[in-house]
Amino acid sequence: MLAFAAALVTGALILVEANQEQELTMQIVYYGASYLALFSLAHLAVRKWAPYADPVILPCVALLNGLGLVMIHRIDLALEGTKVNNVLFEAKAPKQVMWTAIALILFALVLKFLSDHRTLAKYGYTFGLVGLIALVLPGVLPGFIAPTINGAKIWLSFGGLSIQPGEFAKILLMVFFAAFLVQKRDLFTAAGRRVLGLDLPRARDLGPLIAAWAVGVSIMVLQKDLGSSLLFFGIVLVLLYVATERAAWVVLGLIMFSGGALMAWKLFIHVQTRVQNWLDPFLDPSGDGYQIVQSLFGLGTGGIFGAGLGGGRPEIIPEANTDFITAAIGEELGFVGLSAMLLIYALFAMRGLRSAIAVRDTFGKLLGGGLSFALCFQVFIIVGGVTKLIPMTGITAPFLSSGGSSLLANYILVALLLRISDAARGPKVAAKPKAPQPKIADQYTVMVERPK
Image 1 (cartoon, rainbow, N blue to C red):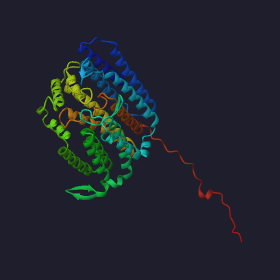
Image 2 (cartoon, rainbow, N blue to C red):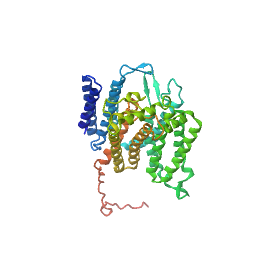
Image 3 (cartoon, rainbow, N blue to C red):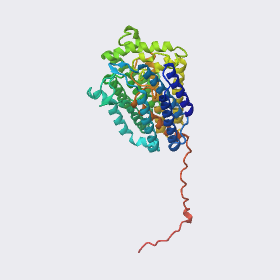
Image 4 (cartoon, rainbow, N blue to C red):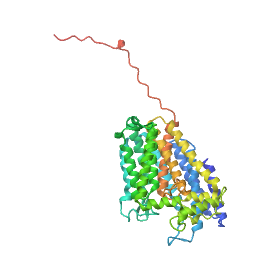
C-alpha cells in the first residue's frame, strides 16, 4: 500500500509539472524518493515497535501527506517569482518535506519509548495542566510573541520560528480527559433530575463540562479562533458520551456552546464578521468575503471531475496552501477527487475506532476513540468552512496543509493510535502461573507445649 501511495504521488507530481509547462527536472525525483524513503523507514519502525498495529492506518496517512505535498508544490510553481503581502514568495514544498521528516522521527520515537499507552494515564493531570496552558497562552501574551495572523491569535513566534501550541494541546487534553473519566466515571453516570424525558446530570457533577465550556469561550474571545473552540469542546462532549453512554451530556453541552457562541456574536466584532461572511460572503466580495468567494468559485470551476492537476487557478485563493488547501484540491481534482480524499480520512477514522473498540482497557478505548474523532471532526470543521456549511475557521487540514506544528502533532496522534491498535490486535499476554500451594493436611506441623 505504501508503494502504491508513492507511485500515485510521483505520478501526480509529474502531471503538475507537465500541465504547468515546466521542464521535468530532478526535483521530482527528489520529492518522490524522499517521500518513499521516509515512509519506508516509518514502516520499518512500526514493524519493529508495534508489529501488531493496524496495517491500513500508516498508508492512509502517507497518501494524504503525499497529496498535500503535491498540491503545495503545485501552488509553489504558480506563485514563483510573485510577491505576497509585498514579500517575495518563498516555496513551501521543501519545508514541508523537512517537517515531514522531523514529524516521522518524532513518530518513531513515540513508538519506541511509549511501550504501553496506559502509562499516559499516570500523568493525566499533568498533561491536562500543560495542555490548558498551551491552549490559552497565545491569547494572553503580547503581540510581539503571539502575533495575530489572518485574524486569529493562535501562534507563538520566536525569531524566525513559529509554533501553534493548540495543535499539541488537543492531544494533551484528550489524555487528561480520558484518564479523568476512567477514574470518575461513576460520577457522570449517576442521573439527576428528569426533565422533558431526559435524565440530566447532577448539578455537582457539571464542573468539568462548565470548565470545558469556559475554556472554549475563552479561546473564541481571546484568540478570535472559532475552529479551535469548536474542536476542543466537541472532543470533550464525545469523550463524555463514550464514557457514560448518556445523550444528556451531548444535549446539555450543545446548549451551553450555542449560548456561549451567541453571546460572543453579540459582543465581539470579529465573530460578527465571520458569521456575516458565512451567511452572505458576496456582500463584500473584494473585502472580508474575498477568501470564501474565491473558494466557492474554485470549487464551482472544478465541477465533478476537476480542472486537472496544474490546470486550475488555486493560487488566487488566499492561504491556498494552508487553511484552504481542500478548496484547491476540489478545484483541480473536482468533486470526485475531493470525495476520495474525504473517504481516506473516513477510512483512517474507522480503523482507529475499530482499534479503540477492540483494546481491552477503558483508558485505551476512550483515548483511541477521542483521537480518531478529533481528526475526523477537524476535517469536518475545515471542509465545512471552505464549502460555507459552517462559519469559516482557521484550523488546518490534517497532513495536507503546509505547516510544521500541524504535522508534528498529527504524527504524534497517529503514533498513539498505532500503539493502541498494537495492544488491541496483539496476542493476549497470559498471566504467569502461580506456584501450587501444598494442602494444609500435608503441611509439616510441630506440637508446641505451653510453658508452665
